[in-house]
Length: 324
Image (cartoon, rainbow, N blue to C red; front, side, top):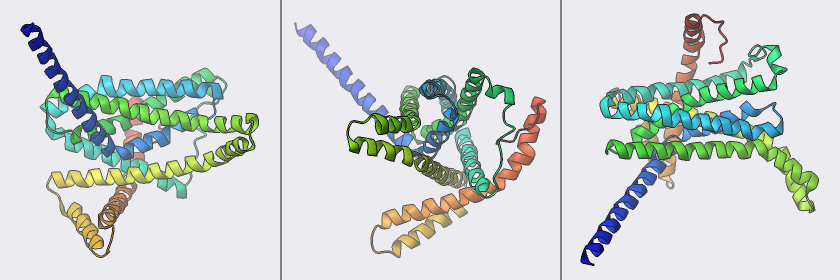
């Protein structure tokens, strides 16, 4: 009997340790995922465009296919690569973060640039693809998964950099939790966004109460403005997060002048106000990081469009179609 009690006590102890480990994984995953906010918002803002033009019945299946591709990107490719780098080549993490931050700056700056210099996409796809919805859907899904791979790489790298030093199993579990949690959050939000207008239309035509029909009409009218606002927020978040990542990377590598200057300016402005100093300091820092990100992104646009894209197209032997 005493042996059984001892065994049960050991099992209870193991369960407590396991529960504590789970709590640690969830807590670390939440903190690490929060740091990737800019890329996450951009992911949620970008994805709805891939289901535009399809029948409503195909919207959720397309989102589900992209979500499955995103999980595969994160768990099968990016997670093991991240763990290998973190444990055997940690010096690579900061340059990779800076590269991903520069990409976010480029993406955000390109969107700002095209507000003033509109461009057309009428040559993106051959005309015959429009007549083949299945082919077009496959092309759109694969394009979305490729775009997701870049954003997921940035998310996973940011998350990995935020995980405290621990063993490889804890890091792997935390990254897996980040991958699953962010994918569910992003594509769950995307599913709600792309079906919101259908729900509003259903409410406006089938609702039994006047208030239900009015709410449905309000949802239908509000969705275009909501999508535009989401894109603006996503762009601002990309510039802010991308700029802050690059600046922090310079600080880590020893080139701290600009990073320190921004923080000194933010502290001076915060001290000049009598209340909400913490928020003011954060807002000034974020704004200056975003301005730096915009400047860096604008500088990268000609590099990407005039050098990188033609070079890549030449290597592939194809015709340049400069989306990015």
